[in-house]
Image (cartoon, rainbow, N blue to C red):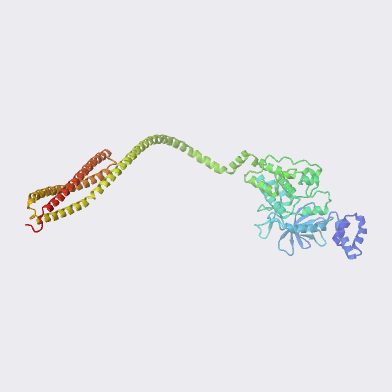
Length: 560
């Protein structure tokens, strides 16, 4: 059994029993018994003197430069460790029972606190006991470099000391950063248990908050306090801790964050009366505190944990929204408040728009009147133009119908002309047949000349026949001339018909007259062709009769 444990057991008994308990616990070990008695002599001094100056004071491996503050469990000093070149904050604890267990607990909590991802947490480096002296907790010092004295630092102060000079907006900013640090600790699995202005430090130049004593208050309470005693500072403690003696939780840390903000806004702790046995609810905040910020504080100090913000991060977000003029938990339940906040956030833009509108409104009114008159004129002109367009549309529809009719008539006439051309193309075949008939007639004449001698008796008849043949030839020549004239006339009529068909769209009546003339001429041509065919048939018949007669009149062979 170690000396610290023996001391702790002895401290739980009356001092008159130490002479009996210590030898029994040491088991006859004289050296151990001497050490235990020396430790008990240290604890036997009720005032437990801690260094008070003049400074610097050397205590074990530390050199104390000056005292930074004091609390119920000890004092905090600005110190230097001999093996390090730099300052640390050294908290020396007053002696009491359970210190060994407390130091081990602090060491465990310090290892976990170093993993908190936040720049607003004061890291704990070590905890233990100075040989022959008090227990200590070594922490980082909260300070800024002193620009006026290179190599020196300016020590921060607690929020309790800084409270008189803070306005509501700055207080909200500091507690917002503080809440984010507490939330980072909760995510690491650490509950602070004693958030209050005295445990929050503020750097002098950068105005950065740093939360100290992470896990130390809880560890100390668990180690040295009775089981029925609440853990934390009663003036800031959540109701469930004060009434029901519950252990610290993330929700109770949210409550103490709200209590810290309450102190910064009012200058008093939310439950200052608990120290004298009273437990009245927090008094209303001063009227100078913005109503939206009062609502946030009241919600954080709700008696029931379920009525508070769900986490320290939620409280930090509410404070951010308050400072940014964005809707908070209470604002989101009112449309008018959201509109008012929007107007406040965009006050400059809305003011600029109002100025622009004020400048442009007269121009807009004048322009509106001018354009209204122009629009009326344009509307009347548009109505007239619309009437004209409708008239033109009707005319175009009539023209399209006339064109369609003329195109149909022209197409029919073109078909008739095509039929006429096909008939005219047959004329060369008729001329060829006529040439063959001429050749046959010539041969007949030659045969008649040979047989003339034998057909003296038929001379007169032959002469008559020749006269008839001449008449036929004259008729044939006349038919040929008429045929050529008909062909020329047909070509002319075709050209005229085509020209008439091209002008049919614009000269409908003239086309109809010309088409009627063409039809009459075609009928005349057909009649003439029929007369010519009949004349040709008569000529051929006469020629055949002449040949027959010539053959009949030809003399027989051997006759003279």
